[in-house]
Length: 488
View 1 (cartoon, rainbow, N blue to C red):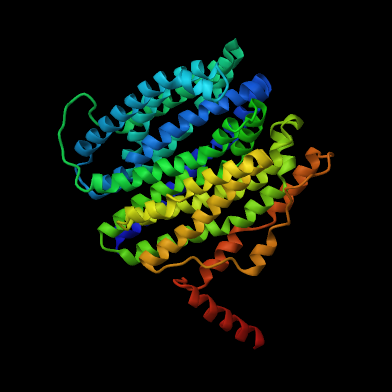
View 2: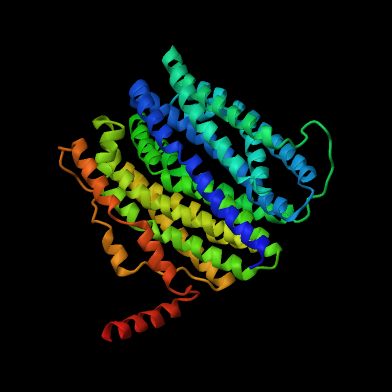
């Protein structure tokens, strides 16, 4: 590896650490925000806020994913990023404005669909967040594409801290759900201001520039983005449409909020992975790109035991964060944490396939999730309620993760090795069934202390001590060698 390529790899590792730590602020700030809102708004008010948030987040995520990966790929491959970036920012903003107008007009109908007339008012207020998100997301994508990982981390930290403070202040002023919505909008504005300090693509000057290869990446990634974004929000929306109450929606949303940790990791890791792989491939170092891709998939597998331990502490975590009123969210959290981990693998593989120049493969491995989930929710939610919704989501995410790994193997002939038997045994057994009513903070502290004894470093070291496995057949050879060594 040349010095420049080594520098790219170090930048990625440093950027991953910084961005993840900054995005991880959503955990303490998000938990404090959730705990504050659930107590101030109650299940009904929090449920209404969760529904409108799910709709807005889905719209913004769908629009961002149209431009997200193509922007990273194009900016990483070009030198004149300002001209390209200005065009992409304006396109992103125009699409966001169209979505804002449509949502404003459709808000009354959406309120009737969910049997909540007050949702129309909340949706119209929250729709102001969409164009602001378009500007912020496009600037953030440009910043990551040019390698500004540290600046990206700083802007995220400012957003999550500002979000917590604004929501607490506005809700305490008596604005209730409207205050929570305005707090989210204000936090996004803070992030945009911070990013504009570092990069300032021209917004008013008209610059016409061709985007070579942009649209060939856009259409498959757009369809994939819409499918996955709708899939991630389909469970909550289907639960409400199929007869769920606002109370059940609030309980389910609380479980989703606790299962957000893997999603934070994916949001921090995947863009940097795509930017780094694109640079390596452009430089002709495909072998190094394959090595980094293999390590990225291995890292997701290493997180499985931690998901098991988290599920085992689900009742204690829910009681500690939300209080006993939200105890029914615990079994949902036990399932959704594994579904969230499956979505991390899908996100990582999507970055790998996009960098490898296979956007159509991204669509093929992700498109089936939505129809399968749609049928599953129709069949299980009327029978099992919230448990049915979480079961369908976890099953589909796991199925998508397995198919995505196979897609990478077909493209680059690399395959992540499975966890050793001793690794899987490290995760304690967990249950999603009824638990004893007596749950104290001391039991939570004991379980957290016990989970800390499980060392992620030892797992990663054992995984890295072996030669990189590029096919399932190599596992058998490695197993035979270990048996011979054991016999000796």
